[in-house]
Length: 258
Image (cartoon, rainbow, N blue to C red; front, side, top):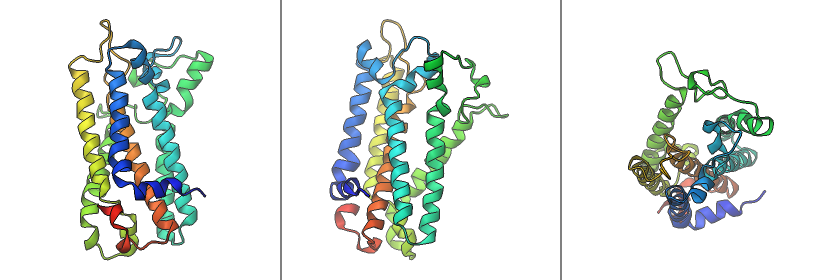
């Protein structure tokens, strides 16, 4: 199985963890807030015959999200096949299940594509949406997706900010194997700054062209979601490289930890 990407991530930590995600995010944000309709529609298009809330599914940000999720799934399976220990394999099964669920949620279980190909209209009111779970309104009036985002934030804080800093204090080798490189801290922080930038631009009306809001209005978090998925891609490819080389986490090369 191909190991070129994990090797590239390990040997180019600054480029893979900081430079690439920052440049891609700035490019996407720049196109959307360029005040040029054609460029904005590359990110979130307007498609005749497709419901407004589904149109952004065919833009660059959403399509890249889907691609990255599939890439994560591939490397998770790769980790499972390469791992010898059942705890690592169980971890990979849980991750693969979560990624597959998130991918299906992202593509709305194919509803936008069915809408495009068959002109089958979807429910317009959020309370009537049956296309996915994260848009469902719960009894407390909150969207289920809000709880998913809270879970993701907890995972990021504990697993990608605190755990790398505490890695050397953890006595169990298999647990240390699963802890991300310290470079992910830079990825998290830069992603947060760029997310705030995108929200600020949207709040100040830069996304409005000829009096019309862009198709990511009230959904600017799509930029940060792409950054989140890339963060998990970095993590799972790093884990894949560690398993492939049967490398003890205590002996991890300095360039992988910074």
